[in-house]
Figure 1 (cartoon, rainbow, N blue to C red):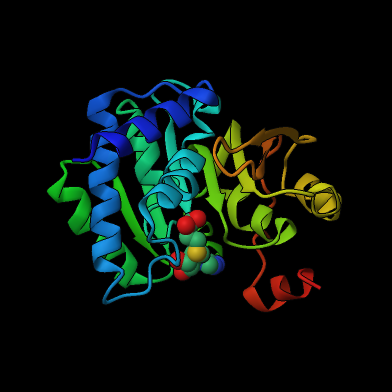
Figure 2: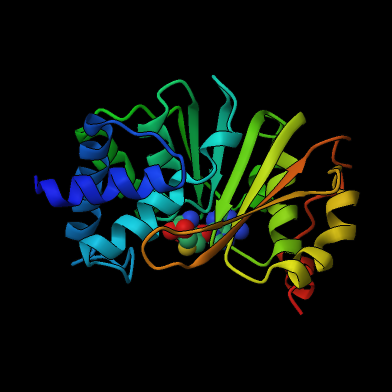
Length: 238
Ligand code: SAH
């Protein structure tokens, strides 16, 4: 594997104080190769240039690491091609990872690629988030729910907070200028049982792109009527 790519991953992560070793970096790059390869026959990502992939999908996926406690159970909601979940799991073997997506073909890809690389996934959930979290086996069962590029924040809170147990967190991975989005989610997040979020801004090391992690801690149990149906949620997007 190209040393230059390994260096670019390790030193880019290091600029954000995220520590990964060579073996982990190699595994992440092998996963990248699997995504780029499968992308020829299946739409997984528009980013296929390796250096750009390293920043957009790998380093970005690592940014929540400091907020994930040792041994946490983590559910990645709308994981797509496995981001951020797979990258977090390669960096931190101590977490127990569940991947949820409405698209079965993407989960099939991840299952195959993860197994080839001996990445241990606790569970794959092929369901819509707003259906899965009404089931007792998933509801309020995770220390951390996380999502990147799935929906606007008021809807995303409703997708994700019902999965989080009391005292756990939902981490929304967002781009720049999130204050209006965060304000529009305020009432819904509180109704769903969350405290005021903490917002951590950061800058990606190569492009200088801004990112924000919006971290909601669960203070109260989510009332049973949430999440509401997709038809109701769609109206929150307007
Ligand atoms: N998190 C990945 C993928 C983002 S694309 C990344 O950042 O690269 C959005 C993904 O969310 C798609 O795979 C889509 O199938 C899934 N998704 C969107 N709405 C969903 C819902 N309500 N329940 C489950 N999955 C959903």
